[in-house]
Amino acid sequence: MERRQIAIQTEFKTREDGDNLMIAGYFAVYNQNYEICNGISESIKSGAFDKVLADNPDVRALINHDSTLVLGRTTAGTLRLKSDNIGLYGEIDINPNDTDAMNLYNRVKRGDVNQCSFGFDIAKESTEYREDGSIHFSIEEIAPLYEVSPCTFPAYEATAIEARQKDAENAKTRSVNVYKEKTKERLEKLNA
Image (cartoon, rainbow, N blue to C red; front, top):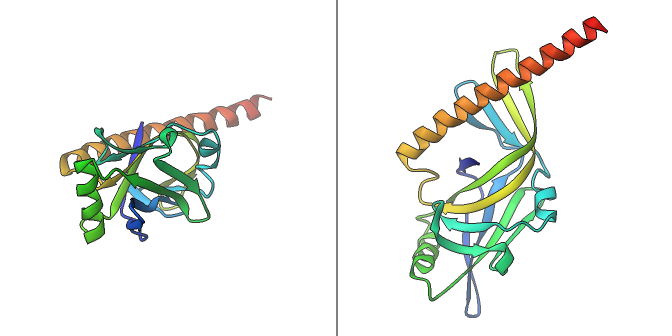
């Protein structure tokens, strides 16, 4: 499972609809570049979530990726996700009887928590090798989507280092695999 920790321009907001409390915002923004490591960047293409969302996935909303702190779930109707022209938008119904959920709700309301992260697998991507030696991955399709998380920090410091190292290793592996495929294609064309 891949995780991306992002600090996006659109922040999470709290809403009240009568007695119903909600946290809403974008968990991912399309066509926004972010650096995985030095010389390797990535973006999510518009519509990358469309297919996975059409399949009515069982996605959880967690607090800081902690599977014991479930805020909502798509199959329960307490998490609603949609893809629009900006990115992956979500609304989480807050359970007023859940102390952890209420604590997060109030932290978002005060502006103390305004970042997010999500856990997913890449179903389809393209790779661009740039003249400056850098590599850019464009995620074209995400499947499955496991979870979305409002986060205090998009990742704790140790986790961020571990995630960056893993992302860099994954990016290098993906880069080598793409190189091998392109070389194989060229050799097949020469031998044809």
